[in-house]
Length: 126
Image 1 (cartoon, rainbow, N blue to C red):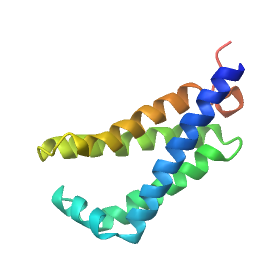
Image 2: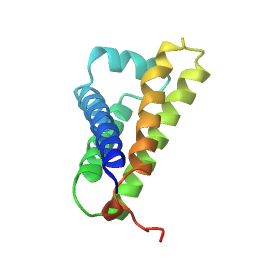
Image 3: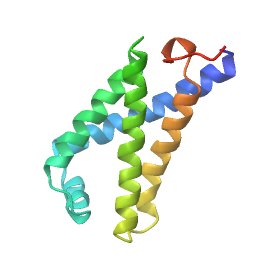
Image 4: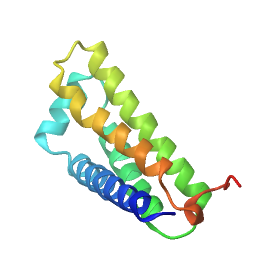
């Protein structure tokens, strides 16, 4: 892995981890704004606990060494949760600003996954 790819990977992964960790904590704390958003979207409050816990577990999986299969599932989970957020906001005809966070996290997930080092990949193309 060349130096520029390594920098791209770590910048994307750091921002992805920060975004997922911070929103996961806020969701576990059931802060008022998160409660308002989740109820506006029509989901039960216990979704905050499930989503928050899985986001934090996903960040741990992405950052710890090895565990390539678990990393693949973590990246997939990030994509599933964030595309769910985008489509939920679309279904509610929310303003475009509501899409910024989830779309950014989708892009960061893709970039982090694509540029991950060979030792973090399930299969390496040769």
